[in-house]
Image 1 (cartoon, rainbow, N blue to C red):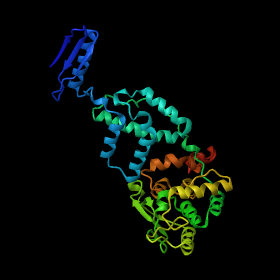
Image 2 (image 1 turned 45 degrees about the horizontal axis):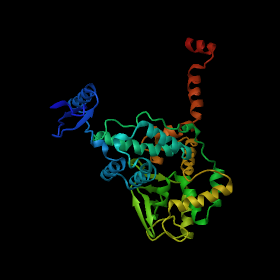
Image 3 (image 1 turned 180 degrees about the horizontal axis):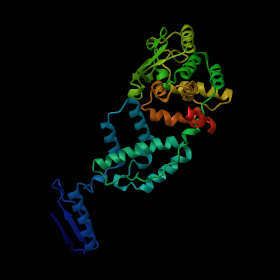
Length: 365
C-alpha cells in the first residue's frame, strides 16, 4: 500500500508500507520525484533488495561494535580487528551514519593512510573496513558498500622478496643478547612464525628424533603467566624435522638458560614469557649493529630459500611452513626456483636436440 499526497505547504509526501508493517515516508518539492522514490522502494521490496531508509542512520561505530561482538574469531584476529577499528577507523568514521559514508570518504582515508603506512598495512586496515561495511549490506543497513572500486596502493611484487644470506643470519645471531641467540638459529632452521617460536615449550621438542611439533602459539603474556592459542591456520599444525645444528642450539640454550616453569624455552632477561616487543627491540639493535634492515620474519624466508636451494618441492615446503595451500607457497617463493628454467630447457633439449644426421641414422636402425 502506497500513496502520494500534496501537503498544505505545497510539497508532496510519499508513503508506503514495508514488510514489517511500518510506513516510511519522505517529502519532495515535485510530485514526479516523489513517484520516482516510491517506485524505487516498491521495486526493492519486490526484488528483496529493500533497505529501510532509517536503518542507515546508525553510526559506523555503533554498528561495527555490534558486529564485532557477534563474530567467532581467533583471539589474535579479534585483537587485530579491535585495534584497527579503534585506532584507524573510529577516529574518522565512527560518528558517521552508515548511509552517509561515501566512496570518496573511503578513498580519502586510504590516501591519508598511505602517507605514513606501508601498502600491506593500508590493505589490512581497508580489509577490516570492507568486511564491516559488506556485513552492513548483508544486514540490510545500506544498499551497497562504499568500498567497492576504491583504489589501494600497489603491493610490492612477490618477486621483490630477496632472502637474507647465511652470513647475515649468523651476524645478527652473534649480535643478539645471549638468551636470544638460539631463537635466531631455531627460527632460521625451522621457518617457524614468531608467535610459534615464542610459544615453543620443551615438551614440543623431540631431541632424540630431532623434530619440533607446532600445534600452538603464544597468544599473549601477562606478567609470569603465558597464554597459548591455536596456530594461525589448520595447516599450521605440523611436525618439522630439524637439523643437528638446531637441536644442538636448543640443548646449549637450555643448559645456560633453564626453561620457564611452564616449559617455555625462550624468555625475557628476567625470566618471564617473551613479548614480541621485547624480541623486536633486541633484534632491531642487533640488526642495526650489523647493518641490515632484516626483520625476525626474514628468518622464515631464509629457511624457505635454503629448502628450495636444496631441491625441496613446493608441496613439501608448504607443509614445512604451515601454509594453507601450495599456491600460497608458490606465489611467495616460486621466483626463487630459478633452476626450474634450466631443467625445462634440458628436458626439451634431450628430446629434440638430436643432430639431424643422428636422427636419420637412428630411424634407419
